[in-house]
Each structure stands twice: as C-alpha cells, then as structure tokens.
Amino acid sequence: MHKDTSVQLSLSYNRGDAKPLTMGEIAALKTLLSASGYALGELLHERAEAWGIFATSHRKIPEEGYLRMLLAPERRQRLVEMAELWKEQGIEILGVTEDAYPSRLVARMGERAPLLYCQGSVGLLDQGGVAVVGSRTLPHDLVDYAREMGGWIAQSGLCLISGGAL
Image 1: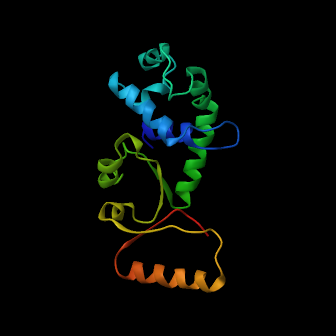
Image 2: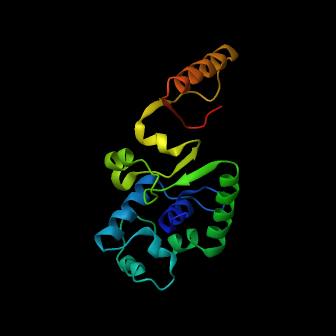
C-alpha cells in the first residue's frame, strides 16, 4: 500500500475512536499540501517539513493536533493490519497514487478521488461499467431480480460497481 493511501485510510476510516475527515476535508488537505509541494504520505514523518504548512489555520482542515491523532502510529498500524486481512480475503484498498487506480476517476474527481475498496479484477474499473445504488433493504423478489441482473451484467463483460449494500 502506497504511503499516501495509508495516510488517506487513516484520515478517513471510522473505527469509532475518532471522527474521520470528510472527503472535502481530505481534498482541502491534499490541495494545501500540493500547493506547498508536498503529498499526503509526507505527513507520516513526525518532523517532516510538510507539517510546517499548518502554522496558519485553514478553515476546511482540522487542527494539526487532530490530524496528528488520526495519523498516530498505533492507529495507522491497526489499520494496516486490517487492510492486510482484507487483502487476504481478496479486498484491495486503492488510493489515487496506486498504479491500479482508475485514471478515469482521477480525471473526473482530482483531489476528491476517494479510496476504493475493491474485490475482483481492479483493472476492469478503467473500462467503466454499471454502478448499482439503492436501498439496503429489499423485498425477496427484488433481491432475486438484482442477482439475476448482476449475473447478466457480468456475463455481458461489464464491470459491476456496487457500494456493497446487501
């Protein structure tokens, strides 16, 4: 996992121990760092010059102390261990700096591009596909219909993109 992805995971994952940053806050942080010639991963080093940009507050970014708490080595280590377990189960976490991250998504979203939790052939993501959104609770007949449609989409060679609802 690229260090920028590790930082974004630590800033955005809700483990119940701290309120994670929103996508907008992460985008603002990336923009601020980038304008100063830095990347997210440079915040992993306690004495990194990148931390100097927080001398002046930015209204869209939490205070430096809060960011440091979200990036605490113990928290990051637990998340990296979780990510390794997910990888063993076939779930991969992709950030924009990963080679496999869909270039189409980066082109459309730029700094706002989210982490992706992927299962299956991630190379298909750049080909586009069919995104599925909807309610987490469905009548049984609609669950059967959704499975049937998902099978048809896959057999058609299209990528099925889902938020992971039931």
